[in-house]
Amino acid sequence: MMNFFKRKKSASSAKERLQLVLVHDRTDLTPAQLDDLKDDLLKAISQYIEIDPDAVRIELERDGRSQRLVADIPLRSTSRHRAG
Amino acid sequence: MTAQVITVTSGKGGVGKTTAVANLAAALAMDGKKVVCIDGDIGLRNLDVVMGLENRIVYDIVDVIEGRCKLKQAMIRDKHYPDLYLIPAAQTRDKNAVSPSDMVRICKDLRADSDFVVIDSPAGIERGFRNAIAAADRVLVVTNPEVSAVRDADRVVGILEAEEKGTPSLIINRLNSNLVKNNDMLSAEDVLDLLGIHLLGIVPEDEAVLIGSNRGAPVVTNGKSRAGQAFRNIAKRLQGQDVPFMDLDQQGGLWSAIQRLAGRK
Image (cartoon, rainbow over all chains, first blue to last red; front, top):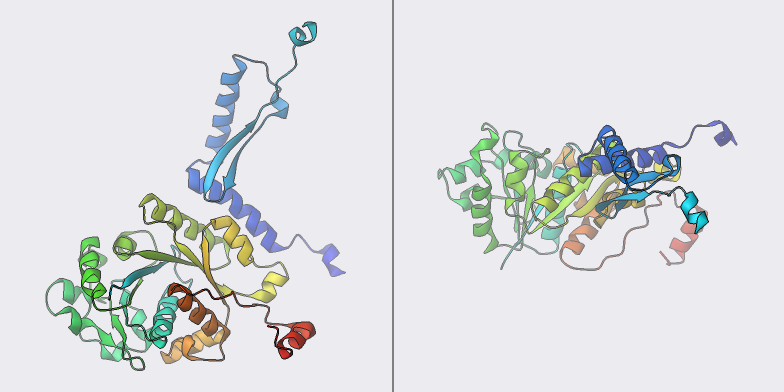
């Protein structure tokens, strides 16, 4: 019953923190550099197509020992689509 | 004979590399294999005391490299297992006294006349580590279920892959199943998921390991020790045998006690 008043167990935070740290260690990218990369990516895409910046999700994901940059970039629906 | 050269490394210090080398080597010797250990930690010699051979050292690995003795003269025979040998590190020299090609040459000579060569790598990713992996056919990474050890292990795995040494196998050392049960220690599954490499064995935390080191008698010689059992199992896996992982739930509880009595475990 005391568990209700305890903080989250430490093994979970160890795992979450390590997941983040390992991704950055393996890619040699700091969180700040990753943010810059995201900004540049969005800027480049925005030159061609209108996107919804608030719904964008760009993350480094682990898949076994390999990393991938996963981007989910919803497009903003434009009047042209509706007119068609 | 063509020995398999196995290097034990970790990145972080103090996770139990030397203990693992002493125990795996002794367990392989118990299985009748001819084993030569090499202490790769030049300047910080340690494997000799853990194996209880510190009083027998005459020559060391740098003496071999610099031609002051023959390879055989630097091989110290174990007290209990006549087919177990140690080539000690030099204590008074710096790590630059040995090069990767020296290690390749020594291991080439040892291969012809033994079943296993087990190399104890120093901590870190510097020269001593490079020396230790130079001749390896297989690399074992030792880690503890603890954030800094896992992070360093991941770095080492990345370097080994970049050097095309292949993906190493993992030994998780000092797992405390009570802490894991309370979710206050990373579980073996957590560590495996984070590192993404093949698991060779899990060694439970066990006071008998320290007691064995104190006496210079590796814990594999203690039939009652669970860590000893874990190391003996890993040694069998190194010989290609399929040994199931131990049940690390030491508390056991009533149900597993009943299962044990019923012979199901």
